[in-house]
Image (spheres, rainbow, N blue to C red):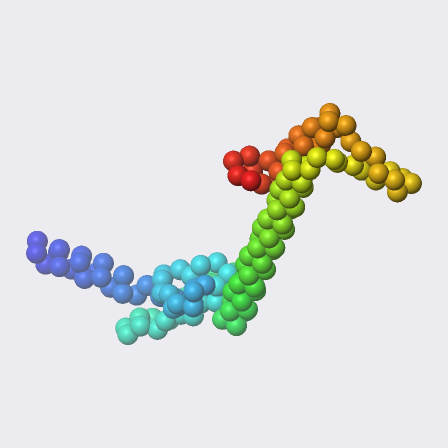
Length: 156
């Protein structure tokens, strides 16, 4: 009985030992090993001591999948890094523009609150002084603009 168990264990071990092992480089540039490479990655077969060459069917299956060379993979990683930096630059520019708009809205609101004699320029270039109701309406509009651009919870 012991001999049968030992024979079965050795048979199982030999099946595991004869498996094909692939080697590839991941997105971080680290070398990876496995029994099947990820799709789209250039992988090479590792010849281990005591293993046979992989069959033609398994090598054809691995070579028929779309592969990227290490150089193409590195170029793709560089392109992704550039795209991420560009996105961060755009986000930074948008945030700066938003802060400037908020500051301008706050300044306009402060001018309306602190000013007494408000006017607008007519088409002929003459001043048209606003009534109290028009000034109040302009102040409300300016406050809404500040709330919209700066958030309603921000202090003046």
